[in-house]
Length: 198
Image 1: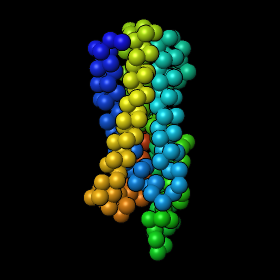
Image 2: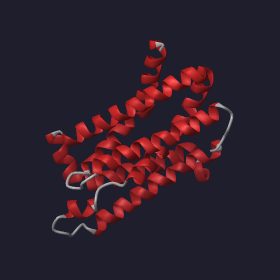
Image 3: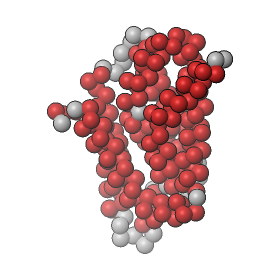
Image 4: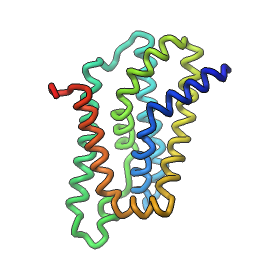
């Protein structure tokens, strides 16, 4: 295995996914007290990233399952999930234990996957030319390194969410911060991509 390709893959993953650590931390902050939440978050992250990889690999081989013009509209996924989370937080604002009410069982795997895929939609445009020039062997190395680093990202997100100072802030403000971040990501994807003529 060429260590140069491994290093390039690790660098490419880190640069294109740095914002995922914040999002994962917010998801992990919703998990305590909900059995299986960590597993659902990790599963969702892997499902979302596997979808990104599948589209990028297919596009590198010449198949386009997702037209370039459709990528900006992926912003609708985190926008909708953010609005749903905001509605839940607002609906339970007067409850005695609003943090628990806002969590409602912790994040679901498909929600995490949808946010991961939508947030990584622009990564596809970066991965395709790299994969196309790397060949099948190089592409396999990239995919393997990426999948290993997804686990590292999940660990980092959980680590940050469980640090006492961060955990205290996220448990107090996470139910507000998560919708704000998801809505911002959704709007950013829509606006930067020129969706709806924005």
